[in-house]
Image (cartoon, rainbow, N blue to C red; front, side, top):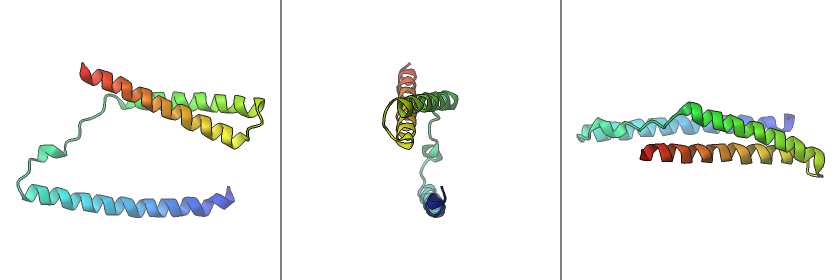
Length: 109
């Protein structure tokens, strides 16, 4: 873990810098649009169906990924880290994809 600390610190610093620049550019764009007479309603982003459903499916996917990662690590020659991370990302992503299709189906109705 100690060898990953500088990487995490660099990612946090660059992420913070990117966030600050992104927010300032976005505010300037919004001000320019409003000065030209654009309707402020264009900034309203439609809310998604349910954040609870999204996080619930994500956490269920992560839990299943941890479980299957453990099974893979014990029963195969796969390295423990590879087994855990691959299954966590696979099933966490599947949970988010399922959420997308549920929200898409509910938007049609």
